[in-house]
Structures are given as C-alpha cells and as structure tokens.
Amino acid sequence: ERRHGGPDHQEAARLLQSSTAAVQNDRLNAARELADAFQCIVVLKGSGSVCALPSQLLPEDANASAAAAPVINYTGNALLATAGTGDVLAGCISAYWAQAHALLSPATLQDTWLAAWRACCAGVHAHGQVADAWNACTMRGANLGTLHNADLPRPLTAHTLARSLCRPSPAIW
Image 1 (cartoon, one colour):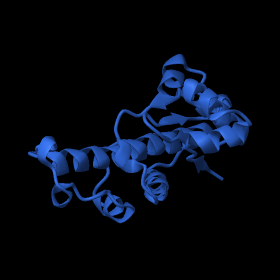
Image 2 (cartoon, helix red, strand yellow):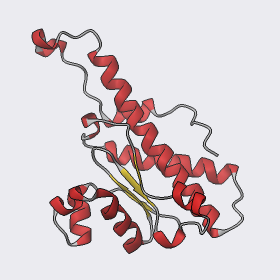
Image 3 (cartoon, one colour):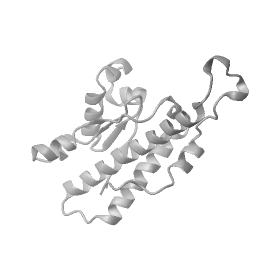
Image 4 (cartoon, one colour):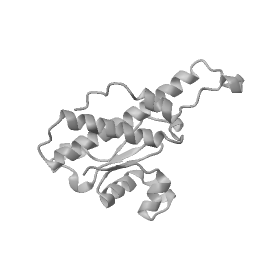
C-alpha cells in the first residue's frame, strides 16, 4: 500500500501536535517528521512546498539517498491557495504514480517507494508550473497602476488547473 499526504502548515501542526510557527520555521524537518510518523510520502503544501520520504526508506547509497532527501519545490504561487487545488494536486500525483507503475516493474520495495517519490516530486512541480504560467499569461501587459475590476486576471480555479494538467507528463522514468 503506497500513500501520500498533503497537509498545509496548519494541518501539519495539528498532526505533529506543534504550532504553525514551529512548522513554518523548519518546514524541511516538519515534512520529514510527518513522513516518518505516518510512513508515507508527504507534500507539505505552501510557498515552497516540501516533498519528504520516510527516513528508513532512504537508500543506503549516499548518492541515491541525497536524491531522495526532502526537497523544496520552487514552482507555484499564491494562486494555488484556492479551494480544490490541493485535490487537483493529489490527483496529479496519483496520475504520475499510476503512469510510473505502468511503465516500471520495480525489483524491490525500495524501488517502488522511489518511483512513487519521483512521481510525487514531478506532480508537485507540474502543478506549480501551471500556476506560474497562468500568472505570467494573465498579467502580461497589464498596467498595475490603472487596473479596473474588468481588467483583473481570471482566477485560477481548480477546474482550470486540472484541465491544464491534462497533457503528457515529462520523461521522469
């Protein structure tokens, strides 16, 4: 059974019986603690979403272990703080994982987890790229000093985000 979780900083604080300030002050460690506590791949959502794999699943090889250490995703923006976009993220990660499972025949349990890890990181990255592209396209050419309500960019809804993600995935396998 493979699982992934995607809490934001408030949900993470509740799960860790901590404060939101403590989670925000050390997001890498909070994501790692959640992954270890719940034995799942975790995406700690927010500005600079963090992806973490349970520690005991890290490969013994130092190079492979570094490749599976918690990572900060640099794509995405505040447009993703919209109702439903976290659900779209979960679906995107699941779609990448299903694709990986269909293409690979992992030899070990660790290989299976690492394939899920790559799918998670790719899904988070693609999700953020859509928001970045949406923001760039809708604000291009806008004179911010003279914007009126009719000139404001269309909001990025969960529906639009999901439709934008329906394209071939990058070659990550």
